[in-house]
Amino acid sequence: MLFWGVGVSRPSNGSTKSSSSHLKRLLFLVLCLAITFCLLVFFTDPLHSSLSAVTVVRPNYPHFASFQLSSSHNYNGGSNNISRDDGSGMSNSISNLLPFDDFRQQDDDRPPRLRVQGTQRRLPRALIIGVRKCGTRALIEMLNLHPDIRKSDSEVHFFENDDRYMNGLEWYRKKMPYSFDNQITVEKTPSYFVSREAPGRIRAMSASVKLLLIVRDPATRVLSDYAQILESKRYKGSSFKPFHKLVMLPNGEINDRYNAVQISQYVVHILRWLRVFPRNQLHIVDGDKLIHNPYPEMRKIEKFLNLPPKINAGNFYFNRTKGFYCMRNETHQRCLADSKGRRHPYVDPGIIEALRRYFAPFNEQFYQIVGQNFSWPTE
Image 1 (tube, rainbow, N blue to C red):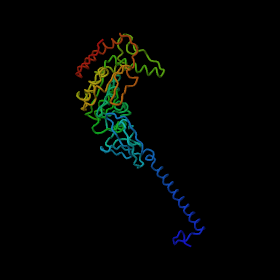
Image 2: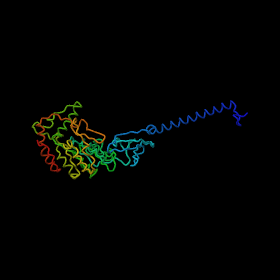
Image 3: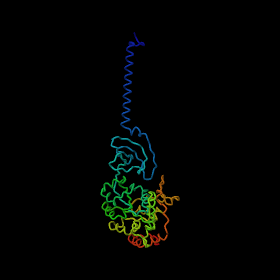
Image 4: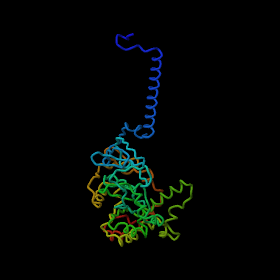
């Protein structure tokens, strides 16, 4: 019998049921294979499956760039590719606008790690060596406004600490941020200035390193030093001697064995540095001027470090609430922590006058040796 007028025989009922059963099995098998394939893709490429379509937009800071994140440390200028090497061999990407400073500084042997190809951790070409409580934190933060500066995240205390120095320069280098060839890495540790070992050790690292020293009225510096320690002691619930008992001896003379007083004898320490480094490798910043009018001081530092002029007066604004200058660029504003610019405890003016008389001859020698007159009060 013909089926639908075509020379094909109608299949029997048994044959139809058999074909339908085979088709169902085939469809079920295809479905299982598809599910298995999807699961394999999902579990072997999780980063791609979860992030491939994500776009993260971050503020466009002046010296930040637009980067594309992938996972093999690739950077070629035109395509702006940043990569991450997590050891998996996967190639995954995200379009990003990420500030350069967002890349956390981890040891080179601690995956995963993020960095731009062409960058590496480099030994500092400039060091802020002191002086404690003269504005070293403000100085490095203001300097970091420049796109050609890369600052260390913390004080490393490498050259004055024997145990850390024994770790070697490679250990020290790994504490530095990633930078390009044209960028200057800067590290700040104020206690280098008063260290006997630091000058020679730093020269052994680099005879051409640039040194930045920031100073202020020595008597005011002593009081600021005391204020910081006093606050720390109060926080810990510890007792601490009054200022006048630390600074003054019972006979009314200045206690020159008090550590804060010794630090403020700038001439004693500067001689140690100038025996090792020529004067033209040392730039001395007036800390009082930096706090009251930052831009002119920063312009001098740019020239000293042979940097193109990128920092301008518009990068600073006076915060009346805090009582000092804060920093800004086109998209971001930043002030130092509340612990900076803390109020000093009340001290009998006679003690401050005695301190200034004590420091006056030290200051005069300091002016002559460095060729700068800071005109600090003499009483």
